[in-house]
Length: 105
Length: 260
Image (cartoon, rainbow over all chains, first blue to last red; front, side, top):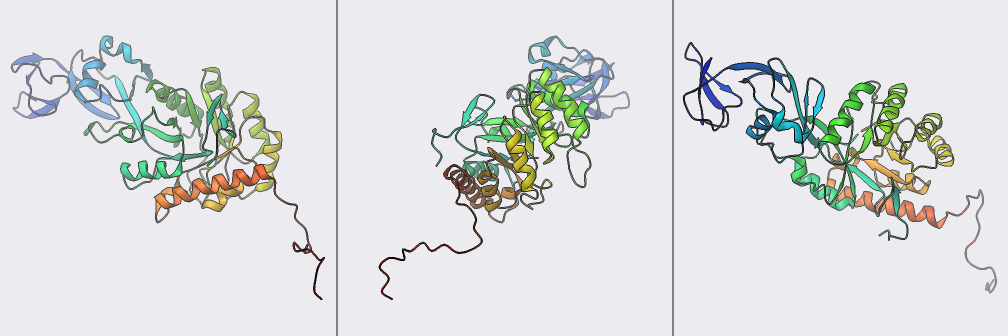
Protein backbone atom coordinates (compact mmCIF):
# COMPACT_ATOMS: atom_id res chain seq x y z
CA UNK A 1 0.00 0.00 0.00
CA UNK A 2 1.35 3.35 -0.99
CA UNK A 3 0.43 6.87 -0.07
CA UNK A 4 -0.73 8.89 -3.02
CA UNK A 5 -0.02 12.58 -2.67
CA UNK A 6 -2.41 13.69 -5.34
CA UNK A 7 -2.97 16.71 -7.46
CA UNK A 8 0.68 17.56 -7.97
CA UNK A 9 1.65 18.04 -11.58
CA UNK A 10 0.33 16.02 -14.49
CA UNK A 11 0.72 12.69 -12.76
CA UNK A 12 0.25 12.19 -9.08
CA UNK A 13 3.19 11.71 -6.75
CA UNK A 14 3.23 8.96 -4.24
CA UNK A 15 5.73 8.35 -1.48
CA UNK A 16 7.26 4.93 -1.14
CA UNK A 17 8.32 3.41 2.13
CA UNK A 18 11.83 4.84 1.79
CA UNK A 19 10.45 8.29 1.19
CA UNK A 20 11.21 8.30 -2.54
CA UNK A 21 8.64 9.96 -4.76
CA UNK A 22 7.53 8.61 -8.10
CA UNK A 23 4.61 9.15 -10.38
CA UNK A 24 1.66 6.83 -10.07
CA UNK A 25 -0.82 6.70 -12.91
CA UNK A 26 -4.46 6.86 -12.01
CA UNK A 27 -4.42 9.10 -8.94
CA UNK A 28 -4.78 12.48 -10.60
CA UNK A 29 -7.40 14.68 -9.03
CA UNK A 30 -7.94 12.39 -6.08
CA UNK A 31 -7.75 13.91 -2.58
CA UNK A 32 -4.44 13.86 -0.73
CA UNK A 33 -3.97 11.14 1.83
CA UNK A 34 -5.80 8.26 0.20
CA UNK A 35 -4.07 4.92 0.26
CA UNK A 36 -3.78 3.17 -3.03
CA UNK A 37 -2.55 -0.24 -3.88
CA UNK A 38 -0.15 0.01 -6.79
CA UNK A 39 0.56 -2.41 -9.58
CA UNK A 40 2.83 -2.41 -12.57
CA UNK A 41 1.85 -2.81 -16.17
CA UNK A 42 3.50 -2.28 -19.50
CA UNK A 43 2.30 0.85 -21.26
CA UNK A 44 3.54 1.37 -24.82
CA UNK A 45 6.50 -0.85 -24.05
CA UNK A 46 7.52 0.83 -20.79
CA UNK A 47 6.92 -0.59 -17.34
CA UNK A 48 4.73 1.88 -15.45
CA UNK A 49 3.15 1.92 -12.05
CA UNK A 50 -0.48 2.68 -11.63
CA UNK A 51 -3.13 2.24 -9.02
CA UNK A 52 -4.95 -1.04 -8.88
CA UNK A 53 -8.16 -1.25 -10.81
CA UNK A 54 -7.33 1.69 -13.08
CA UNK A 55 -9.76 1.77 -15.99
CA UNK A 56 -8.86 2.57 -19.57
CA UNK A 57 -11.22 5.53 -19.34
CA UNK A 58 -9.34 6.98 -16.38
CA UNK A 59 -5.96 6.30 -17.95
CA UNK A 60 -6.88 7.91 -21.25
CA UNK A 61 -8.40 10.87 -19.47
CA UNK A 62 -5.33 11.34 -17.29
CA UNK A 63 -3.09 11.28 -20.34
CA UNK A 64 -5.19 13.99 -21.94
CA UNK A 65 -6.22 11.70 -24.79
CA UNK A 66 -9.93 11.61 -24.06
CA UNK A 67 -10.91 13.55 -27.15
CA UNK A 68 -8.15 12.34 -29.47
CA UNK A 69 -8.30 9.80 -32.25
CA UNK A 70 -6.55 6.92 -30.57
CA UNK A 71 -6.90 3.18 -30.35
CA UNK A 72 -6.20 1.05 -27.30
CA UNK A 73 -5.11 -2.54 -27.10
CA UNK A 74 -4.85 -4.60 -23.92
CA UNK A 75 -2.93 -7.84 -24.27
CA UNK A 76 -3.39 -7.64 -28.05
CA UNK A 77 -7.18 -7.22 -27.85
CA UNK A 78 -8.59 -3.96 -29.13
CA UNK A 79 -10.76 -2.19 -26.58
CA UNK A 80 -13.53 -0.18 -28.20
CA UNK A 81 -14.21 3.30 -26.90
CA UNK A 82 -17.50 2.37 -25.27
CA UNK A 83 -15.71 -0.31 -23.24
CA UNK A 84 -13.10 2.07 -21.77
CA UNK A 85 -15.08 2.81 -18.59
CA UNK A 86 -15.66 -0.86 -17.80
CA UNK A 87 -12.20 -2.12 -18.67
CA UNK A 88 -10.18 -2.29 -15.44
CA UNK A 89 -6.52 -3.03 -15.93
CA UNK A 90 -4.77 -5.85 -14.13
CA UNK A 91 -1.17 -6.24 -13.02
CA UNK A 92 1.21 -6.99 -15.89
CA UNK A 93 -1.29 -6.08 -18.58
CA UNK A 94 0.32 -4.98 -21.83
CA UNK A 95 -1.36 -1.79 -22.94
CA UNK A 96 -0.79 -0.10 -26.28
CA UNK A 97 -2.17 3.33 -27.09
CA UNK A 98 -1.63 4.43 -30.69
CA UNK A 99 -2.50 7.42 -32.81
CA UNK A 100 -1.74 8.74 -36.28
CA UNK A 101 1.55 10.35 -37.17
CA UNK A 102 3.03 11.65 -40.38
CA UNK A 103 3.85 8.91 -42.85
CA UNK A 104 3.79 8.11 -46.51
CA UNK A 105 5.03 4.81 -47.77
CA UNK B 1 -8.09 21.91 -62.97
CA UNK B 2 -9.87 18.62 -63.41
CA UNK B 3 -13.60 19.05 -63.35
CA UNK B 4 -16.11 16.62 -61.98
CA UNK B 5 -16.45 15.39 -65.56
CA UNK B 6 -13.44 13.19 -65.00
CA UNK B 7 -13.58 12.03 -61.41
CA UNK B 8 -11.15 9.61 -59.86
CA UNK B 9 -13.44 6.94 -58.44
CA UNK B 10 -12.01 4.91 -55.59
CA UNK B 11 -14.13 2.43 -53.65
CA UNK B 12 -17.29 4.13 -54.90
CA UNK B 13 -16.24 7.64 -53.89
CA UNK B 14 -15.45 10.39 -56.37
CA UNK B 15 -12.35 12.53 -56.02
CA UNK B 16 -11.22 15.47 -58.13
CA UNK B 17 -7.55 15.04 -57.42
CA UNK B 18 -5.52 12.13 -58.72
CA UNK B 19 -2.64 12.88 -56.41
CA UNK B 20 -2.44 11.10 -53.06
CA UNK B 21 0.19 12.42 -50.69
CA UNK B 22 1.95 11.23 -47.57
CA UNK B 23 2.45 13.30 -44.46
CA UNK B 24 5.91 12.15 -43.38
CA UNK B 25 9.34 13.81 -43.44
CA UNK B 26 8.15 17.41 -43.27
CA UNK B 27 9.86 20.01 -41.10
CA UNK B 28 6.75 20.46 -38.98
CA UNK B 29 2.98 20.04 -39.13
CA UNK B 30 2.50 23.57 -40.47
CA UNK B 31 4.66 22.74 -43.51
CA UNK B 32 2.83 19.43 -43.92
CA UNK B 33 -0.47 21.26 -44.04
CA UNK B 34 0.73 23.86 -46.54
CA UNK B 35 2.25 21.23 -48.81
CA UNK B 36 -0.95 19.19 -48.82
CA UNK B 37 -2.98 22.26 -49.63
CA UNK B 38 -0.65 23.13 -52.51
CA UNK B 39 -0.83 19.57 -53.84
CA UNK B 40 -4.60 19.68 -54.07
CA UNK B 41 -4.70 16.13 -52.69
CA UNK B 42 -7.91 14.92 -51.09
CA UNK B 43 -6.50 11.65 -49.77
CA UNK B 44 -3.55 11.73 -47.38
CA UNK B 45 -1.67 8.83 -45.89
CA UNK B 46 -0.68 8.59 -42.24
CA UNK B 47 1.18 6.07 -40.11
CA UNK B 48 -0.01 4.39 -36.90
CA UNK B 49 2.39 4.69 -33.99
CA UNK B 50 2.48 4.66 -30.20
CA UNK B 51 1.39 7.80 -28.40
CA UNK B 52 4.33 9.37 -26.57
CA UNK B 53 3.25 8.61 -23.03
CA UNK B 54 5.84 10.85 -21.41
CA UNK B 55 4.44 13.81 -23.32
CA UNK B 56 0.97 12.85 -24.53
CA UNK B 57 0.00 16.47 -25.13
CA UNK B 58 2.39 16.91 -28.03
CA UNK B 59 0.80 18.35 -31.12
CA UNK B 60 -1.07 15.83 -33.19
CA UNK B 61 -1.03 15.55 -36.96
CA UNK B 62 -4.81 15.46 -37.07
CA UNK B 63 -4.90 18.88 -35.40
CA UNK B 64 -3.58 20.09 -38.77
CA UNK B 65 -5.12 17.62 -41.19
CA UNK B 66 -8.86 17.66 -40.60
CA UNK B 67 -10.34 14.20 -41.25
CA UNK B 68 -13.60 15.91 -42.18
CA UNK B 69 -11.81 17.67 -45.03
CA UNK B 70 -9.44 14.91 -46.13
CA UNK B 71 -9.79 11.19 -46.58
CA UNK B 72 -7.21 9.89 -44.11
CA UNK B 73 -5.55 6.73 -45.34
CA UNK B 74 -3.65 4.87 -42.61
CA UNK B 75 -0.71 2.81 -43.81
CA UNK B 76 1.06 -0.22 -42.42
CA UNK B 77 4.53 1.13 -43.09
CA UNK B 78 7.16 -0.64 -41.06
CA UNK B 79 5.27 -3.94 -40.91
CA UNK B 80 7.35 -6.92 -41.99
CA UNK B 81 4.70 -9.61 -41.74
CA UNK B 82 0.99 -10.06 -42.39
CA UNK B 83 0.03 -10.32 -38.72
CA UNK B 84 1.58 -6.96 -37.82
CA UNK B 85 -0.03 -5.30 -40.84
CA UNK B 86 -3.46 -6.67 -39.98
CA UNK B 87 -3.06 -5.62 -36.35
CA UNK B 88 -2.09 -2.11 -37.44
CA UNK B 89 -5.13 -1.86 -39.72
CA UNK B 90 -7.49 -2.97 -36.96
CA UNK B 91 -6.04 -0.31 -34.64
CA UNK B 92 -6.34 2.32 -37.35
CA UNK B 93 -9.99 1.48 -37.92
CA UNK B 94 -10.65 1.65 -34.20
CA UNK B 95 -9.06 5.11 -34.07
CA UNK B 96 -11.88 6.28 -36.24
CA UNK B 97 -10.88 7.40 -39.73
CA UNK B 98 -12.82 4.80 -41.65
CA UNK B 99 -11.93 1.42 -43.03
CA UNK B 100 -9.75 2.21 -46.04
CA UNK B 101 -6.12 1.22 -45.52
CA UNK B 102 -2.86 1.34 -47.45
CA UNK B 103 -1.46 -2.12 -46.99
CA UNK B 104 2.31 -2.52 -46.97
CA UNK B 105 4.08 -5.68 -45.92
CA UNK B 106 7.74 -4.91 -46.34
CA UNK B 107 10.29 -7.51 -47.34
CA UNK B 108 13.53 -5.93 -46.14
CA UNK B 109 14.69 -2.61 -44.83
CA UNK B 110 17.24 -1.90 -47.55
CA UNK B 111 14.93 -2.04 -50.55
CA UNK B 112 11.58 -1.64 -48.77
CA UNK B 113 10.23 -3.86 -51.53
CA UNK B 114 6.94 -5.58 -50.73
CA UNK B 115 6.85 -9.13 -49.39
CA UNK B 116 4.42 -10.66 -51.87
CA UNK B 117 3.21 -13.69 -49.86
CA UNK B 118 2.80 -11.52 -46.77
CA UNK B 119 0.93 -8.86 -48.73
CA UNK B 120 -1.44 -11.43 -50.26
CA UNK B 121 -2.08 -13.05 -46.88
CA UNK B 122 -2.81 -9.75 -45.14
CA UNK B 123 -4.97 -8.52 -48.02
CA UNK B 124 -7.14 -11.63 -47.86
CA UNK B 125 -7.70 -11.24 -44.11
CA UNK B 126 -8.41 -7.52 -44.36
CA UNK B 127 -10.86 -7.89 -47.26
CA UNK B 128 -12.67 -10.60 -45.27
CA UNK B 129 -12.89 -8.21 -42.32
CA UNK B 130 -14.50 -5.53 -44.45
CA UNK B 131 -11.55 -3.25 -45.01
CA UNK B 132 -11.13 -1.31 -48.23
CA UNK B 133 -7.64 -2.48 -49.09
CA UNK B 134 -5.16 -0.53 -51.23
CA UNK B 135 -2.06 -2.71 -51.44
CA UNK B 136 1.46 -1.50 -52.19
CA UNK B 137 2.96 -4.13 -54.45
CA UNK B 138 5.70 -4.78 -56.98
CA UNK B 139 5.20 -3.70 -60.57
CA UNK B 140 4.18 -7.30 -61.13
CA UNK B 141 1.04 -7.99 -63.16
CA UNK B 142 0.49 -11.40 -61.57
CA UNK B 143 0.50 -10.11 -58.00
CA UNK B 144 -1.70 -7.19 -59.00
CA UNK B 145 -4.21 -9.54 -60.58
CA UNK B 146 -4.29 -11.76 -57.51
CA UNK B 147 -4.89 -8.76 -55.26
CA UNK B 148 -7.67 -7.51 -57.51
CA UNK B 149 -9.29 -10.96 -57.62
CA UNK B 150 -9.35 -11.22 -53.84
CA UNK B 151 -11.24 -7.94 -53.59
CA UNK B 152 -8.73 -5.13 -53.19
CA UNK B 153 -10.22 -1.76 -54.16
CA UNK B 154 -7.14 -0.75 -56.16
CA UNK B 155 -3.64 -1.96 -56.86
CA UNK B 156 -0.63 0.20 -56.12
CA UNK B 157 2.44 -0.95 -58.01
CA UNK B 158 5.67 0.82 -57.16
CA UNK B 159 7.41 3.01 -59.71
CA UNK B 160 10.76 2.47 -58.00
CA UNK B 161 11.92 1.83 -54.42
CA UNK B 162 10.25 3.95 -51.74
CA UNK B 163 12.03 7.26 -51.33
CA UNK B 164 14.37 6.65 -54.27
CA UNK B 165 12.97 9.29 -56.61
CA UNK B 166 13.95 7.22 -59.64
CA UNK B 167 10.64 7.51 -61.48
CA UNK B 168 8.90 4.66 -63.30
CA UNK B 169 11.62 2.05 -63.83
CA UNK B 170 9.48 -0.50 -65.61
CA UNK B 171 6.86 1.22 -67.76
CA UNK B 172 6.21 -1.95 -69.71
CA UNK B 173 5.08 -3.83 -66.63
CA UNK B 174 2.91 -0.90 -65.60
CA UNK B 175 1.33 -1.01 -69.08
CA UNK B 176 0.56 -4.71 -68.67
CA UNK B 177 -0.92 -4.06 -65.22
CA UNK B 178 -3.08 -1.31 -66.71
CA UNK B 179 -4.32 -3.60 -69.47
CA UNK B 180 -5.28 -6.34 -67.04
CA UNK B 181 -6.78 -4.31 -64.21
CA UNK B 182 -10.39 -3.37 -63.74
CA UNK B 183 -9.71 -1.63 -60.43
CA UNK B 184 -7.82 1.68 -60.23
CA UNK B 185 -4.06 1.47 -60.71
CA UNK B 186 -2.23 3.88 -58.43
CA UNK B 187 1.52 4.24 -58.85
CA UNK B 188 2.88 4.22 -55.33
CA UNK B 189 6.44 5.11 -54.42
CA UNK B 190 9.53 6.06 -56.37
CA UNK B 191 8.28 9.19 -58.10
CA UNK B 192 10.96 11.88 -58.00
CA UNK B 193 9.69 14.94 -59.77
CA UNK B 194 6.71 16.36 -61.61
CA UNK B 195 7.54 14.77 -64.96
CA UNK B 196 7.56 11.33 -63.30
CA UNK B 197 4.05 11.95 -62.04
CA UNK B 198 2.99 13.18 -65.46
CA UNK B 199 4.37 10.03 -67.10
CA UNK B 200 2.36 7.81 -64.74
CA UNK B 201 -0.87 9.60 -65.58
CA UNK B 202 -0.07 9.81 -69.32
CA UNK B 203 0.27 6.05 -69.37
CA UNK B 204 -3.23 5.76 -68.01
CA UNK B 205 -2.62 5.19 -64.33
CA UNK B 206 -5.58 6.40 -62.33
CA UNK B 207 -3.60 8.20 -59.66
CA UNK B 208 -0.18 8.52 -58.11
CA UNK B 209 0.88 8.40 -54.47
CA UNK B 210 4.00 10.12 -53.20
CA UNK B 211 5.60 11.57 -50.11
CA UNK B 212 9.36 12.04 -50.29
CA UNK B 213 9.33 13.67 -53.72
CA UNK B 214 7.48 16.59 -52.17
CA UNK B 215 8.78 16.54 -48.60
CA UNK B 216 12.44 16.23 -49.59
CA UNK B 217 12.34 18.95 -52.25
CA UNK B 218 14.24 22.14 -51.42
CA UNK B 219 10.90 23.94 -51.53
CA UNK B 220 8.23 21.39 -50.65
CA UNK B 221 5.32 23.78 -51.15
CA UNK B 222 6.43 24.70 -54.66
CA UNK B 223 7.08 21.04 -55.49
CA UNK B 224 3.61 20.11 -54.20
CA UNK B 225 2.16 22.62 -56.64
CA UNK B 226 4.36 21.25 -59.43
CA UNK B 227 3.17 17.72 -58.67
CA UNK B 228 -0.44 18.86 -58.81
CA UNK B 229 0.17 20.36 -62.23
CA UNK B 230 2.19 17.36 -63.38
CA UNK B 231 -0.63 15.00 -62.46
CA UNK B 232 -3.21 17.21 -64.14
CA UNK B 233 -1.10 17.57 -67.29
CA UNK B 234 -0.49 13.84 -67.45
CA UNK B 235 -4.16 13.04 -67.06
CA UNK B 236 -5.15 15.55 -69.75
CA UNK B 237 -2.53 14.19 -72.12
CA UNK B 238 -3.84 10.67 -71.51
CA UNK B 239 -7.41 11.74 -72.21
CA UNK B 240 -6.34 13.77 -75.27
CA UNK B 241 -4.52 10.78 -76.76
CA UNK B 242 -1.00 11.47 -77.84
CA UNK B 243 0.14 11.44 -81.47
CA UNK B 244 1.90 8.41 -82.81
CA UNK B 245 5.67 8.34 -82.78
CA UNK B 246 7.43 8.43 -86.17
CA UNK B 247 11.02 7.94 -87.16
CA UNK B 248 11.12 10.70 -89.82
CA UNK B 249 9.96 14.29 -89.92
CA UNK B 250 6.51 15.36 -91.02
CA UNK B 251 6.19 19.06 -91.86
CA UNK B 252 3.47 20.93 -90.07
CA UNK B 253 3.52 23.91 -92.45
CA UNK B 254 1.67 23.51 -95.78
CA UNK B 255 3.71 22.97 -98.97
CA UNK B 256 1.11 24.84 -101.11
CA UNK B 257 1.84 28.51 -101.76
CA UNK B 258 5.59 28.27 -101.37
CA UNK B 259 7.39 31.18 -103.08
CA UNK B 260 10.24 29.02 -104.34
